[in-house]
Image (cartoon, rainbow, N blue to C red; front, side):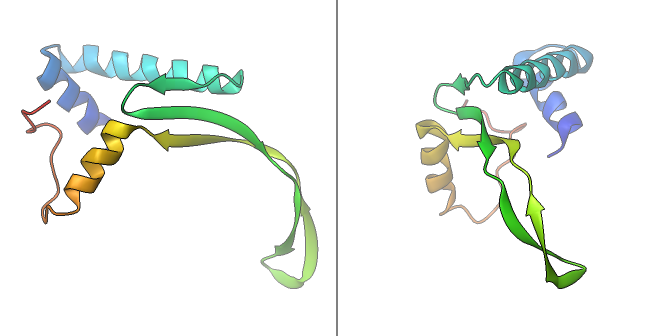
Length: 108
């Protein structure tokens, strides 16, 4: 599912227009990005937590010249840790053979 599909599913689930759902989704993504840039954690209880951390610099190998070593600088990266509800849903999905559609799921 891509962003447009997710916005459409939100619109159907919540009863708003697709444009409103897209604006809400854009706002959420923007807020999460800004919080991670400030090293703040964003937690959605049950779903999971987004956090940022600095990956240490290290020595790597130049893929075009495998004999050549290169320095890889430290970099800030995003991390996602799934919450208990998401973990449980994924564990239950292991027994399901067909993909589950968010738009048609009425159990939420």
